[in-house]
Length: 343
Ligand code: NCD
Image (cartoon, rainbow, N blue to C red):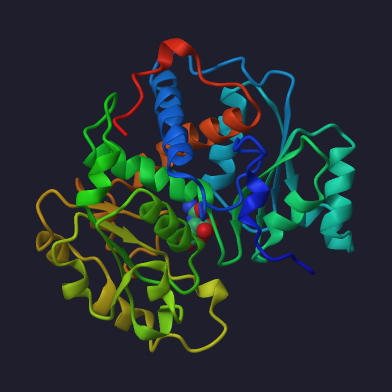
């Protein structure tokens, strides 16, 4: 498949408003904070009894997933439904792309049904940009993960979770918290679009120190240029960390011999209860899911008191509602708004 080079400029209109979300790379800090604040307002509505808003009534959102997904696809669908949009879920294995229809033809066919927004996941880096470059005017593209490149809503929900738990909680979060934090991203960084989006977002918010912690075979060459410190040993990589983001070992993207064995990876880089006990007492543990139990994380740690893995899933709904409603020009209700976060 022919894809185009990422073009971050594509996602902002002439007035600097978000019209597609393809990557966090290059987003202005103010806009990123606006999205997190908007997500706080949606989260407040979601914590009430009536979780539905009528703001996207009459709009059509198409979920176009060319790769498997559990939480991203379902939370995008739920987010759209909470905003009263009509949602189409295209099962790609059952669609005409498996008969050879090109991405371009799939896009144009679905556009003819007056879709307003496409949520796209694809194994090729650049697929969401390709869609955005070819979409009709007024049709928005949200990247739900393209190859190893970017997963911007996961990056946003990770920032939202960190700000919520390290920046003063619900209602008055502080964006300055990032300036005091050391964040360690551990595991299969090489194949991870989540790691890239997290790093971009954390940098934009001025994070004190961003570390990647992995065996040399799972660190992309030149990643230091993204402003991170590389550690090839877990103990030093976790020393003094406030936030630990674990990554799934992406066996399906591993063509070569990246690791001697899963057991060896677990021995050297897995987060066990013993290693958890050595973290700072207030350090938090995150993982985008799905987890490989007993590989990058022990099951007890994943569901233990320090883990925010399920909170991340819930926050994904509010964050996706924020992005959808901001792009389609329908903000959260005024009564759900707290004063803007401390900037
Ligand atoms: C991630 C993805 O698909 O990029 N998962 C997710 O969206 N929650 C990470 C992964 O698959 O390991």
